[in-house]
Length: 482
Image (tube, rainbow, N blue to C red):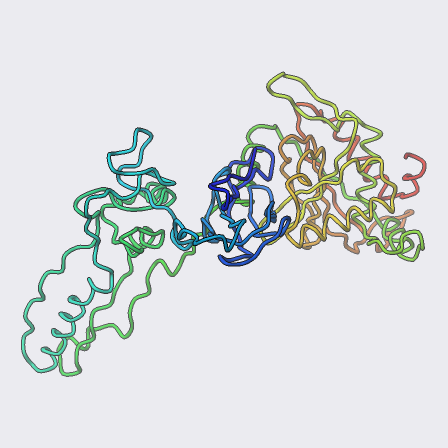
């Protein structure tokens, strides 16, 4: 799809592209430019996060930034214009930007799929403001002033020994202006619905009377306010609490689920309840593997690449798949077929600040040990920097997850959707082990292999896991079995 539109010979617009495989939205994480900045073809103007990764977007033409259509933190649908560029600056007065970037579009009371109401023009959501005059709610500060004054007068009167007159009633600020529909963005409406909150009862604090997320949360868990402290001579002084009761909302933090985290949740639920998982375990003596790792670190052919146990484990899994190719497959539900893969795109689970992602090494089965080491190093570095592309996470066939780096013995990993198996590697620890008839301290770890029982039966899964264990126990099998 095209990502550009031309509003005139002078101004060009850049749309949110589909940076993944059929993704429908992305969140703007950071703008690298502001209105008035000069940009050139290929310059990165912003970073966005999709359901798969964070991606930098380059602008495809030269000019001066005229307008940023959305602020940072906004989730934008694919195809919506996110930035306008003046490609012929200085040729005349530029029109004012259509909207300030700090203000997101607000759903109006007349939003719908029908024709635009008379005298109103379509906006991003709904049809904007009618031409007739409207009344805006007074700002929160202005509304609170009479109430604050009344409270202050009551306290002063009590201090002077006089009964305080009842404060005048302050009009409620909840609900919508003129009895219409409360103003709120679609995500806020959904939040209110999920929490069972009637927006008409929520006091708005946003600009122009817009209800915010914080307003909805405040309505769901209202703060408990302490009574005004009475003077020492008042009989109520001994009954007044020493400090205000903490608000219940201070005990919880709500984090919106979106981007990579949302995609992970959906994928894991789908995998867990679609593919029948089976997990098998084996504990193995990897002392010889650890010695091989130490030797490879001194090998000149491995200079410049990172050598660690994961490298040998990855190579062991690739050899086990070569010996048992039926495990490298996928289940085609639509056609009721098992699709055997004659290539291995080896996924490596990586923990990042945005959540767990699983980029994969394309055609890992064809790589030599030094090539595999280089690919692993590049994959991990890119993931830690948050630069993994959606393409790098697509098309995986089997995965390794190394939970041992957290000191965990092992786990029962959930399959990545579309894959047949995932190998969990536990912590490598020095343990007492029977070796050549005697109990000796040996380097030991536990492996766990989860597989889709629709296409991998117990025998096949057991053979794969046993082969991996045998290679790690006797690494020379990498030569004899490869």
